[in-house]
Image (cartoon, rainbow, N blue to C red; front, side, top):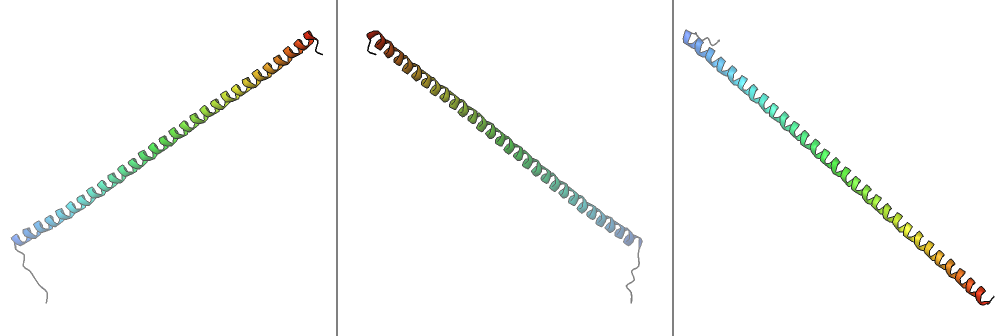
Length: 115
């Protein structure tokens, strides 16, 4: 046997209200889920932005370090060049002194007649 309910007007109205309430609850749940999804998406976007910023900062740091290394290398090269110049000058001076001394000795010997 089937359960048969006799609807009165009040019962019908009550059931309609119950259906509306259920629909509203379902809508609320859907809205909450949407909001949660949006929040998650926003958080993910923020995380991605943070990661990108960190990567950019790291790249900048690497660039700075490379520039510093290049500058240091340039300075070292300059120092090496300076040192080379100094050595050349010293050699030239020594050669000049030696040749001057030789000339003087030869002159003295010539003048004295030691040859």
